[in-house]
Every structure is written in C-alpha cells, then in structure tokens.
Length: 555
Image 1 (spheres, rainbow, N blue to C red):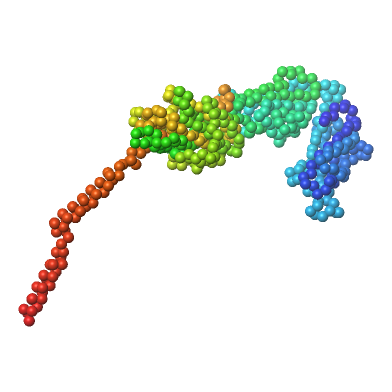
Image 2 (cartoon, rainbow, N blue to C red; image 1 turned 90 degrees about the vertical axis):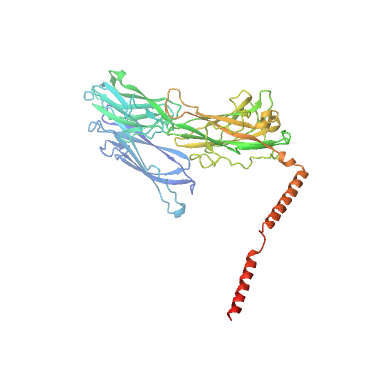
C-alpha cells in the first residue's frame, strides 16, 4: 500500500484481515480483542470519524472463516516527516470467557504471530512538491558472498549462499524504491531480517520471488543481503541463477543498469561403493559311480548386493545393473531368477529384468539346498556392514578355485552363455551416507548343466557381475568422487562322487576278518616275547623266601 497524494491532508482506507484457524476447538467460535495503531511515532494518521490514532475492537470469529474490517483513515501533516513511512500496527489476543471452565477456554498456538506491522511509504516528489516526477539515476550492483567464478558452491556442503545487493542513486531522490529478486526452483529465498521484504501471494510456497522495500527515498545508497535456500539442490543442476531488478517512482534516466543477473557454478561431492556376497559360496551336486548326475537336482543360491552412497551432495538416482548368466547359446536355460528383495530407506524400488522372465516362487516345492533361510537385507541406513558376515567382501575379481583347466566358466564375459540384465533404479539419496540392499535368489538346473562334460568332471564357476553408477549427474556439473563401482560375486558348483557308497559286501567282510587275524597274530607274538609274564611277582616271592631263611639262621 502506498500514498502519493500531493495534498497535505487527505483520506485513505486501511483494511485489516484476520484468518482464524481452530484446531480441535471446544466451541464453534471464540472471541478476540485487538488494537490498531496508526503512525505511533509521528501521529500523522488518525481514524475517521474521530481524531484518534488507536482503534480498539472486539470480534467473534467463526471457525475457518476470514473476516475483513475496513477503517477510514485521515492522513495529515506529511510535511513534518515526509520521508518516514506511516506505520500500521495490529495487536491481537484471545478473550477468556467467564462462562467457560479453564479446560474449555480457547488457547492460541504458541507460534502464532500476535502482532502484525505494515508500512505505507510516502512519495513527496521533488523541488519542494512543485515537481511531482523526480529524475533518478539508480545503479544496481550485486555479487555472491565468498564465491566467484573460480570458487564453486558444493551442493550439500554446509556452506551458506548469500547475495549482497547494493542500490546507488546519483540524481534526485528515488521514492518508493522496490527491489525484486527472482530465482528458479529448486533454489529458494529466505526473508532478510534487516529489510522489509515479502513473498508475493502467488509465490508464497515456492519462495522463488522476493519483493523488498528499500530506504525511502534513496539519496545515495542502500544495501540488502539475501540468503538463498539451497536445501533442495541436487546433482541435476550445474549452476544457479539469481536475477535482481530495482524500480522507483520517477523518471529513470539510465534504466540499463537497474537490473543484473548472477550465475554461480555448482559442484558435487559423492561416491558409490558396491559390496556383496553369495549366501552358500559353494553348491555340491552328486555324481554316481559312472560320473553321471545322480538325480534331477535344482539348487538355489542368494546373491546379495549393498550399494553405499557417500558424500554431502544429494543424488537423485543410482542405477544398479546386474548381469546374470541364464542360458547356453543353444537356448537351454540353466538359471531361474526370482524377483529381488530391495530395501532402501523405506522407499519403493522398481526393478526390471531384460533378457529373461522372473520365476514365480513355488511355495509347495522344496529344493535340496533352499535359500529361504538366507539372511534378508537390513533396512537402508548406516554403512551396510551389519548384514555382511564372514562370506561377505568388497566386490573384486575373485581367484578361481583349484578345479583344473576344464572347469566351465559361467560368466557373462564368455561367449558360451547368454546373460540377463537386472536393472534397479535407486533414489533419491539424501546428503548423508546411505545404503540400499538388494538380494536376488537364483536357482540352478543341474540337469541342463550336466550335459556339458566339464560340469560333471570338474564343476563350474558361476559369476554375476554388477555395476552401480550415479545416473542423474548433470553433464556440466563439476564432480568429485567415485561415480561408478563395479564387481563380481561368484558361486562354485562342485561335483561330489558317490563311488564310495557302492563297495561290495565281501570286500568289507574280508577287511574285517583280516583285521581280526592281524590282531590275533600280534597278541601271540607279544606273548612269546614274554610281554604277558608276571616276572615281578616271582621276584618278590624269591626275595621273601630269602628273608625267611636269613631270619631262621640268625636265631
């Protein structure tokens, strides 16, 4: 609201608007009392009719209803302090009703503003009111505090982003100067504490536009420091832009320098790590005495991955890509893939499988080596180390087991097999260390695998390879950290021969009889050698007889 009349005395209207919000109210309505004070310091405005600058009122407010109360105001004596704004102050408080008990009394929210202040700036014109239009020459200068073209702002780094705006005027006074600051979402603005600023009603929630009333008038210089809200910035931006424009009443002789646009480059600090393990690092399958598969076996294993995001910059999305061998080149499928279990900060995660179809879990079927009791991933949080047991390790190229040169390599890098790709999109990630857990159950059909002779002789080496990468980085964003992490999880498929279980009975009987004869022969030899004779007892008897004879001869 502004007043621009050249008359020394005039009438205007002041309007107060109250919005009352009741939370579990004891009654449908309540009463308030308030006071409106006009220009308390200089007394240049009074209510009309009457000649008082204070208006006391009492109102009964209905629930969830706005009430407007217009008042006619007389403006006078503007020449006394023509450059000082007229202040409108509204004070409110609840009325305690004697008819209600203490528990039935309405209570105001502690954070509710009980005082509202509005200001009306005055434009007096130039040359002692003879010329209504002033010739102004304003110049706007702005810069980022502590940042320049050489120093980038790290997203999530904890530093504050501030813009210092200075407005200069080198001609006649600039009345009612307004500074407008605009940014683009997700960047937002904070209200400065040293200057009267507000957000337009259409932008009250986004906070991307700010309107500030500068010193009235600007004769020389006025400065405003605006802090920007960077809490919603992510890796999707490489820079931010702040636009400023200043206007005032009068004729601007040089409008080209009343606006400015600033751009600040951004930087990101984030890293991804990949951990994993195979629950059951080795699967054993039985072979008969002829080296053939003993039965139609289907065994299962669980490959678990932990994706860890570190660094201060929030990341919108991390893509986890898992390559799983599923079939031979002739189309025979030896691996079944079940839908993965994913835990990520309580957020739903969608995974897609390319090159194969998910297998539906059969509740009635029991495999010989079920992974139903395998540990599920923990909830996303911390560094993800609590769920990794002695089988877990940071993913790296493993050493092959000692299975000979003929061991079959079931890996996606070999041309022998075809692989499926499991893709999981994880995000958004906050600006703190976080973890996502993905567990994939795999089932092997050894009937298909046994058709390869190397499987039945020397076993196989099954590997799933995974890649985790920050997928949402802006191409021009300066980045520090590990954008990609890769690794391999392996499971050893080891044959177990069953030849020992088919030994003939007569061989066992012959071994037992031979053992008994050997034991008897050993005992007879020991007897012949005098091992079982009682020499000590005979020597003791001889000594006793000698003592008896000596005693008799002595008598």
